[in-house]
Image (cartoon, rainbow, N blue to C red; front, side, top):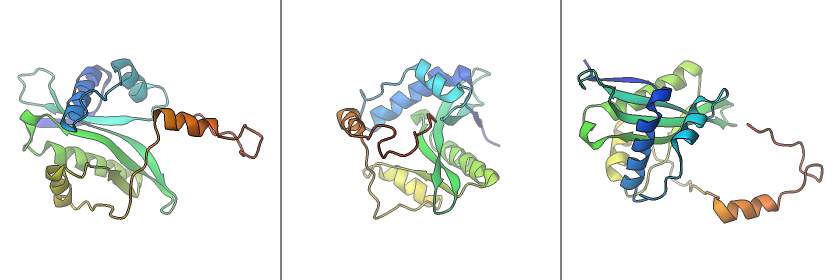
Length: 180
């Protein structure tokens, strides 16, 4: 029997989830990188048409107190080759005091179950090259690295510069891109 419960994130969890995001940023050697606020996280998760989803692990051995010890936040992606959605895991963290209890594996298994139940073809995530404990853990679950692929990202000035070069609507740009 597990001493934790996995469930979807609820509005009252937002502060604890953001605390875990900050903890993950520290672990990933980017302690000052988190700009998200509780209001922004709440909007992303609970707007009428959310684009972000998540699950938490609640410690059942916390004397009845609500104690979130881990979280996974994710969103849908799409495979044009497979013709269906998948899950992209944005963040997964288990509080250091709660590790080695199967919580990370349970969160990943829960998301794999969501994929299977909904007919999604893929469950993907990224991991830093130096994070060998996580890489070894993911491989132990049967996950494979996507060798030969490199992640690219546009942010800040580069993102704005590219956006500024986009043709105006009606000037060869095709139909306007929907807001969601």
